[in-house]
View: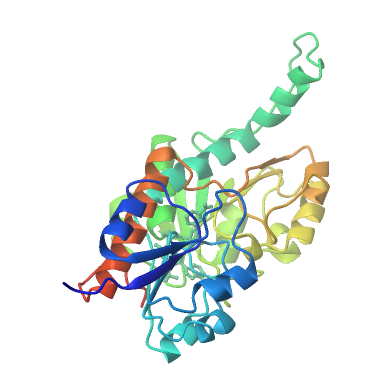
Length: 322
Ligand code: NAP
């Protein structure tokens, strides 16, 4: 009988992921649903591991890799892997896998939820009723911005960004996108037009950010970029918080350009109730729940488990990060 490889899992995952792992591997686990694994437990946990299944809350850096002399495979239950030191993995020939595609539509739905909520002041309206502030109807009460028929600009039009654009067609929108380079196939399929970042910001009524966090995109949106936006435009970030200079976004929102923002991700997560963004009426915030539907989280966990088992048993998986 073949020996089962040892793996470490940094959080109990939804079924059937744990069953898949247990069938093929000897599993050690940080078995606490609420609290991310403390650093010392992580360093201890990987000591014997040939495989590691981790989450976006785990910083997998050179220290962790050095603490794991037998490590051959890292599987992250996410599509983004900016919390992982890929150079440290590559130096040891350790394979990294992620979970693209299965979360694309769910994350695009949340981007649209934030866009519509920010544009139409949904949360502000809810709070108004909650505090007993809903008075007699009047013509300009709680007026917001239209989305239907306007211009949608997506920054980072990959899997999620294209799903966001596709929804924009149903809203009769003119579609713009910005990547590092134009994508003719995307243009042919969606009828979207390429713009430089500055032109996209100036022309769009809604800007949705879905680019990965890299050295190039860190701090991509600051005062200079917000100053280019229309005073009626909505800014949405469902990518990663550090793409945005948050203090500059707060100042821009306070000054009314952009008109409002919807944010699922933040520079340092989790944020607390004293965060400056919460002093603004024109923001809608969610706690990094882009992929958080029941079905999608199960699909992500299952895929992360399957990826790890495949790599450790020398089988191909299309989800190796290159
Ligand atoms: P993807 O398919 O790789 O798409 C990323 C897109 O960004 C690509 O089209 C890429 O095009 C573009 N891009 C890369 N660098 C860029 C730059 N410097 N400037 C402009 N565009 C750039 O990835 P995905 O599956 O759509 O996921 C995107 C990101 O969403 C993930 O990395 C993750 O951080 C985030 N995410 C968040 C949540 C959440 O819970 N909020 C959930 C899922 C994913 P080019 O290569 O042509 O530039």
